[in-house]
Amino acid sequence: MNLSDTGRGLIERYLEHARTERRLAARTLTLYSLDLDKLAQFAAQAGVALAAVQPHHVRGWVARMHGADRSGRGIALILSGWRGFYRWLGREGLVTVNPVQDVRAPRQARPLPKALGVDEAVQLAEHVAEEDGSWLEARDAAMVELLYGSGLRVGELVGLDVAETDAAQRAGRGWIDLQADEVQVLGKGGKRRAVPLGGKAVAALHHWLTVRGQVAGMGDAAAALFIGRRGTRLTPQSVWQRLKRRSQLAGLATPVHPHMLRHSFASHVLQSSSDLRAVQELLGHAHIGTTQVYTRLDFQHLAKAYDAAHPRARRR
Image 1 (cartoon, rainbow, N blue to C red):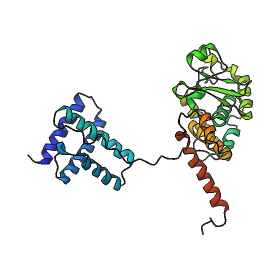
Image 2 (cartoon, rainbow, N blue to C red):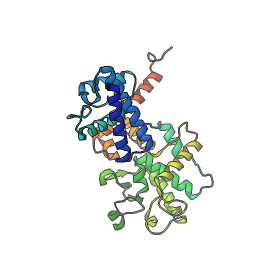
Image 3 (cartoon, rainbow, N blue to C red):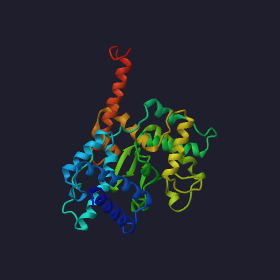
Image 4 (tube, rainbow, N blue to C red):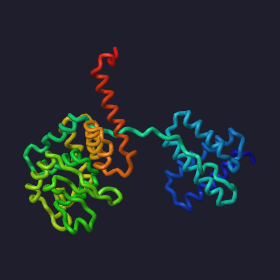
């Protein structure tokens, strides 16, 4: 029996195990099969049996895939499939060491978050999407001002109550405090933080609260700051839909989603203050490294300003 026959037999046995014991979906099994076929091809080219593959073989194959412009994420998924295969071989007593265990895919460059320019953010906030002055316009305007003015996550936004109550404390919800001009937010990991409310946000919230009673519901929704047409607490999906509609009506080139406004808040505060620690606290990031991505956005902003303004930067 040659190397390829032996390798194919092991792969078929593993895929049958994955299908019957792990109950993986057909699509997942197809992807595993393709990735393991690639492993068998690499092993055959190297003249080594699958059960004899060593870590240096795997690292070499990773380098080949990376050199062929395979993305870091794609390689990571392939390695995950290979790792599971060798884990199974180990349980079957066919290998003593998993050669893929400590091999990692090349790190992928972290994409920059998408943020609006200052003019675009203002255009979105000041656009009147509902010309009839309905409660919907008042609600949506307040949502935009909170997302952009305080950098909230969409989950934090929809979890806000009108005021601090024992029920809000017990349920782990946030609330607005218009007397202190701040919003009390319950963020990731159950961590609370206080974020200032800008003047525009305070005005928008006051206006929304004057018309909110038209649709206020019962039970949990009675305390919810943002509610929908049926009087229930607004969902993240509804916020996404309303922001997309508002950005289109405002004439923005890119549909806006809630996290884009959070990115815009962080980028614009950093551009004005250069205070990375303050931005970290306002966003509720546990680690400064998470916030540092906005320094790249800030540099990108400066580079564009330089290209547009400096006489020696202009290209012919």
